[in-house]
Amino acid sequence: MPGRLIIFCGIPGSGKTSIARIVARKDPTTVHIQTDAIRAMIAKPTFGADESDFVYRACVEVAKEALDKGYTAILDATFGSARRREATLAPLANSYSRIDFVHVKCHLETALRRNAARSSEAVVPEQTVRDMLSTFEAPFPSFVVDTSKITPEAAAGLIIQALF
Image 1 (tube, rainbow, N blue to C red):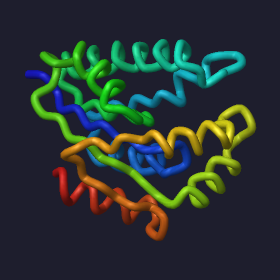
Image 2 (cartoon, rainbow, N blue to C red):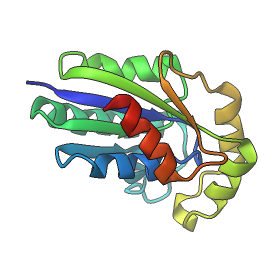
Image 3 (cartoon, helix red, strand yellow):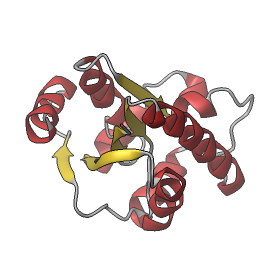
């Protein structure tokens, strides 16, 4: 039986990865797939369109494999546009039994502060974060969690309660 797909989306620094890690730990059959982990394999990331296409395609391949084996797959990425989500989901269409979207959001200042605190090779350029926020298309329907004033643990608890 195909697995369950959970898409975590939001701008860099919103808290997607911290929360997704906590949610993933609740189920031993969950695979947490991050675009950041794939991008970290690139010697000098540019955050350009071609690079992003490569990163998302690599994540889709891992997700497809996990879903086809019956795992729950958490895809953790910006997914900033409906076009990006559609392009990602198309090759997975027959691989999941259920899909849920989690939109992790926060104030821009919070995201920029968190992003700046990352290790130097993981920092997304500030203008890129600003651009992503200005063009972000929130998925609908989705479970929305605002991490401006709650901890990743509290956000994960809300998500687990809502989705499981």
